[in-house]
Length: 390
Image 1 (cartoon, helix red, strand yellow):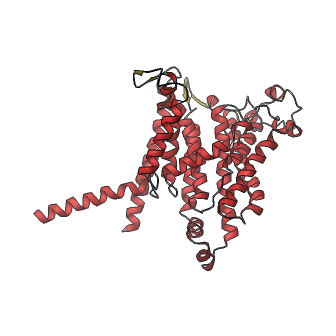
Image 2 (cartoon, one colour; image 1 turned 180 degrees about the horizontal axis):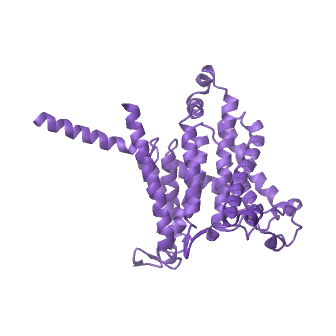
Image 3 (cartoon, helix red, strand yellow; image 1 turned 30 degrees about the vertical axis):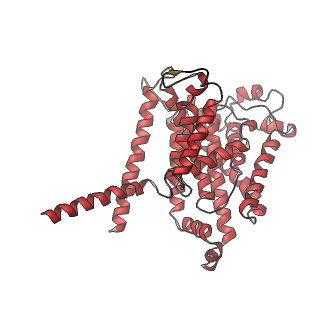
């Protein structure tokens, strides 16, 4: 009976996700760039990127108990890998104007010549997967020495890695590959994602990043609910007890670290799609702290919480509170109070209030299917009361 109930709740959760994807596709067609609600599409695009980054960090910090602060570095690697392998040949010399580009392969361009528009899609998918794989390789290399550390020491080591990788990617000697301190541009971005059916053009600029995040988060959910996920949780709760039960600590920590970094690389590639540029200076340690804040706000150990926390964070900082910097907010014109920088003050107060009243985050350790439990209990109580009165 319990398994049937869980299957039913999971099925309902899948329907909710499918309806949400359909809604995003509709919004892509209805909302125009000049509309006031165009910021909603921006929030969905950036929110999906940060949601994937937050969930991948939660896999490591929340489910395995490894405190890592190197997420921005892995996202940087993913963004650069995607950008390098999707710049078309005609634009490469313009992008690498100060260097002779060492890599002159564009996956979408090569596959487009033989497969048409489908080749473009396949090339983008290959570039995104490669971005995750390259980030995973970096994670495996850095994980060999640092995963022997614990707690704050691991956090400091991974934070140092992120800063080192950012400096290395801006190194002039690597300019033929990374373009040095100059930005990468002119690669495949979300504005180019369109599907033509007859005379109808279906825009997919918001749907694509949301779909990528949804698929990756679904894979993380499957991993968390597998035997590996249970091993991760056992390591988080008590390493000594987990080892006594036969769990190989070094192996499972490495699996968690590499998997988390793979999805961080995919998030970085998706961010490059959304922003249209890739530059190392954008991936500072402050980005890691923001992602960690999203995880804490949503609930450490809750994938649904990470998604909700990310979307709310982006919506509040990028959209809802933006009027506080321009002097007008909620129809109130007060330039003496609402001025540049006041948005960050209000945003910080809101975060403090949420942390004070939601000690375990918005969702705690609950997931989307768990939200159906209270309603089921209330319904059963009402049914039992009716039977008693009869």
